[in-house]
Length: 139
Image (cartoon, rainbow, N blue to C red; front, side, top):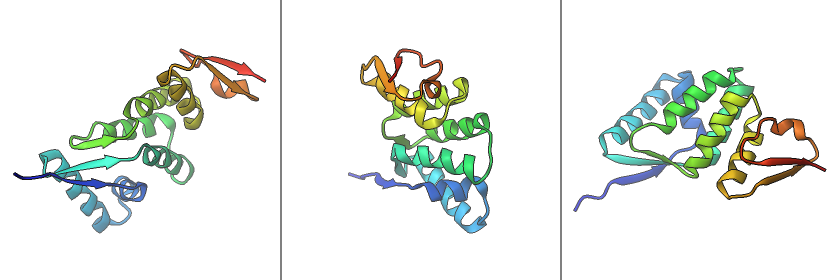
């Protein structure tokens, strides 16, 4: 019985692949993604990698949120790749893309909704504008 090899990836693999500033490293990641696509391996991505990837693309590469959301969405839909906390990541990404809020605030709102929590308490309500499904309480 063959067992599919499982691997975990970190953010710098995805950055090298997406930015393609080191062709050899980008090719290595491309090969891993192709192996995942054919079912030869399965890639697991911790949700924190998605968060860090978005932060790096925003802060170091000055990409716009819509472009970043498209990139991350494509990664999440890669055959043979599973992200932890998938529904929270997808919901946060949707809020990040459509509501114009910071990723962390979008993530907190998505987390609250996923956990069935209906209130977010904060000192700065403006960070949670249009938080569908949760009430934001400014303290």
